[in-house]
Length: 288
DNA sequence: TTGTGTTTTACGACCTCC
DNA sequence: GGAGGTCGTAAAACACAA
Image (cartoon, rainbow, N blue to C red):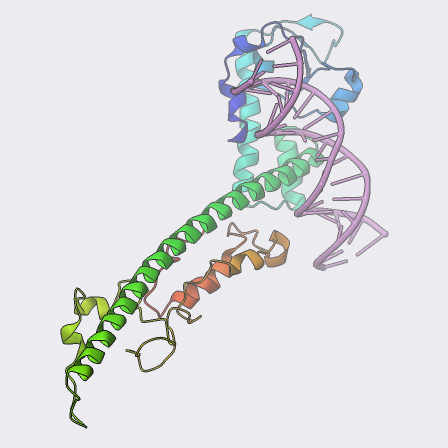
């Protein structure tokens, strides 16, 4: 619960405070500490309360606001209980459905002894808080995905460098052979693979990063027939490094008010790109 | 003690939907 | 046009660091 801090702070921290409480039914209001007069405060912040209020020494009773009255420990406990029940009920209701239909609003208001307007405002603010948290979670997810892709990128790059070195080595080998003795026309040369040093067959066939091939098509002989670089191929290149930023949707845009991420469609698309390529880069994503 | 950041309630402006 | 939504912000209070 967001307001949990109100319940567990030590009451001694408010000794000497000039805060006073104004009770109305089971609502307790924080009294004016500033220049704002009592009426204004009561009108403006009728819902507000805190644990410190609960342990404060005095408050004004609804029936006789001019008289101070000391709350017994039992009364305070009752107040804590009632207030906590209210917030818990609102939270529970919010978890079930974060939008508030008129009927539910009226029910909650009468159940909690609040104005329907207060319930509506509470839900509005609660949605705003939820959205802020959701954005933070989305940011964390995206950052994690970015870091993961960056790491994968580095790995693929290293593989690529390794393969390029292999190409250079083999090219030099072939050239040396040709210089040593001109090959008979039509003679089949030895498989290059057999002479490649320090490179295992698995390395050439698979890098463990979804496949890899020599990128550079301009220098040296090609070991791949297609001539296309897998590395630069958009269908294979891990998605999500840049795209999602441009594709961010607001809550209103995608109607993602159902607990899903604001970036869900973008990430789902990115994940779809990876599917079928044996790459589960975005497998971390879970609906929150 | 003071300044700053955070949390919560509340409101007004504006937008969307029926 | 009204109801209800989001967004931005004010106000109050607290926590915490300097």
